[in-house]
Amino acid sequence: MKKLFNHVPFRIKIATTGFYVFLVATLSLIPANDLPNVPFFPGADKLVHAGMYFVLSILILWTFHAKKIARWKLYSFVIGWGLLMEWLQILMNAGRHFSVFDIVANITGVALGIALYNFMNKHMRLQHT
Image 1 (tube, rainbow, N blue to C red):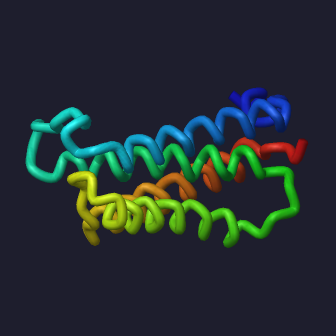
Image 2 (cartoon, rainbow, N blue to C red):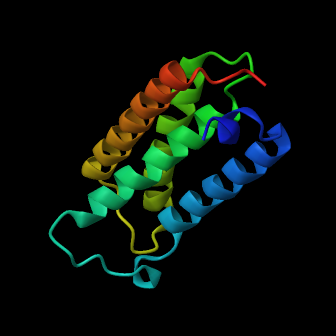
């Protein structure tokens, strides 16, 4: 697993993360009618939100691990991306709605992703390549 973090070329990291950012944007902004229903239990979509932003935060930190970018800027980007997606849902008027609970789920996913990444970084001693 350590090799996964330490030896992937930056261009591959950027491509992977860029694709995922595009995927999150697409899933956040397509019309509500085109989305599958998540019927497992009430609020299950909040787990989807948290999961998407959990992965996004890990990918962003992994991609820019060796770059001299302040961590707070990376955290702000991921949280800001979630806020932007919610705001764009209002503007697009495509059957999607702004939700404070979605924002809370997004931020929860980001916080968990940051915690896991920092734990892995500390215990695996990720290299700055």
